[in-house]
Amino acid sequence: MLVKFKELPEDSRIWIYQSDRAFTAEEAERIRELTDAFVTQWTAHGASLKAGYELPYDRFIVLGLDQSEASASGCSIDASVHFIQALEKELDLDLLDKMNVTFKQGNYISYKPLLDFKKMAKARAISGKTIVFNNLVNTKAEYLEHWEVPASESWHNRFIKG
Image (cartoon, rainbow, N blue to C red; front, top):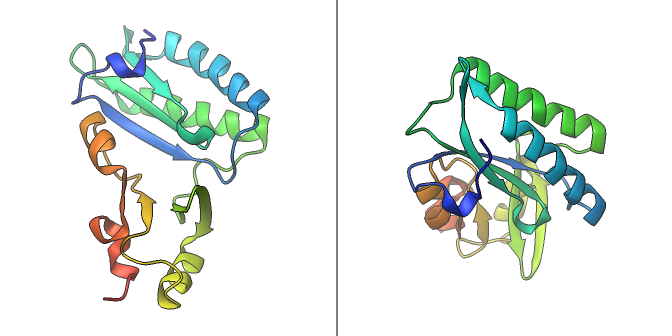
């Protein structure tokens, strides 16, 4: 069952998929169309899942699931990953590579392989104050409070020199 993302409770489980590039307006519209269709029919063991999504910065797909009525099962999680893989193929996007880091440089959103991010940190091109996207958050509350954070407050801190 598709609901507005903002209507999902704070303890909703979330999955964040970051794109290797910004979505065009046409791609964002297609992603909305396909995600609406996917979420509308998304089930776990025959039970409809109450879920929503948003596309922050036209760069991420944040899928949220209210588990108070029905929880995600292995099969339903697999279905969501297959859906994301289909989006990748149709739109020529990379949404599943977890070895990349997305962060802000002024008003610009940068996407770098983890190795390049480490090199930038070593060269002090980024600092603990650099805003990073912590895609490891698990709930909507964590997403709202701890997704966009200074690198010093996320797992990225291990690469930043004092």
